[in-house]
Image (cartoon, rainbow, N blue to C red; front, side):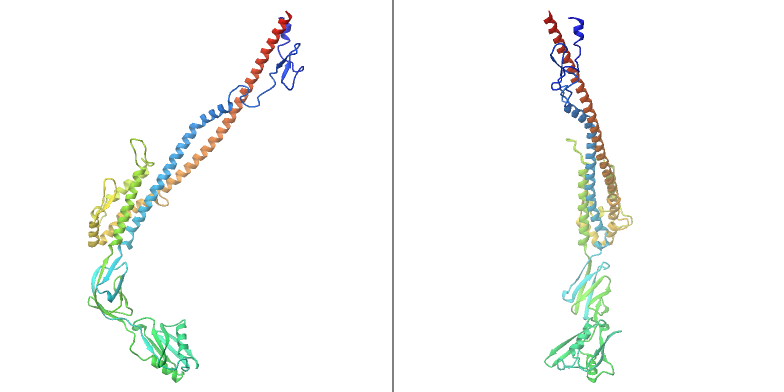
Length: 489
């Protein structure tokens, strides 16, 4: 092998013997086709090196992204679980607040039962300011509305002309009667008048003829009416007015009764004002005993609603703060400082006393707390307190420093529009939004990282391919050189 022959075959010629279809060159003086290291670069990543570049890049990107994304996911899940826990706590507190509203409402303690021993005497209704007690009632007369009848005359015949005046107290109605008007026309004018003083009119057609009937729309002497005709009226119209203004058997009268021997009169049979907060709706005369007592059903219902709502809250708090030592599972608000503060404040109120109240505490009222935190009610003790001192029971719950009042304040501080739960919920939602932004930013960084890796591996793949081509060219060139030398020998 001569030095000159080696130097002539150390590199392919790009100006002679090039084949564009095969990417090979012809070695000088040999006529053999050899690979061209400058041709046939990669058409896709991995072809030159034989490596699965796509899988490698994906694995590196996933490895880079997994840690930060796992932290974001874990924090997001924790925040969402806390939100769910706070929502459940808020719902339970809302139910308790509703029950406390019953106990602090004056209407709960101002509902009364009132009964008459003689039911035929009438009925009784009460107002919140009624006073419990027993009263003897003696009704001697019922209130009555005034009623007057005209004399009979032929139906539809005119009654004369002029001005007819109907008055009740200081109110009066003037009716202009024409020469052709009948009793029916007068009745219609009275009933349709916008300034009717309180009289209704009708015409009764009897066997003797038509008669005008006037009736006061309200009972009592003060609501009786008078009828007159002015001096210019016809004699027949004056006669009609005189008849209607003559007292008869159905005159206005007031109800007459006594309550525990005290005389009472009333223009209406609905007698109110004689007994505070009590209205007697009289239907007959006679005697009866009236009994007014507090309706304890509303209070008992309110107390039971409170106990049920509170025990529901205890159950929810128990779930939120639970811990299973076997599995390690825990409630989403275990160790939460806000919830712990709520529990302390509620326990303080329930175990406290109301200063100046003769009952003093829930326990003295028959409402006690068990070891698991739930409440129970001794109905007998509660009923006894309601019977003996309902005002004290009301004050114990709904007074300015009452148990229900204090609990309502505590619950409102946590569950009100600007309370702790609302504030924390807002903060957590903001944090979750921030975590979503972090996820988006991480994805954007990983996309850039993936592109960088793809570029780097593509360049490496291209380099390896080029080196492989060069290696193949040198190998073939050496083989060709050896063959040529062997042939010469």
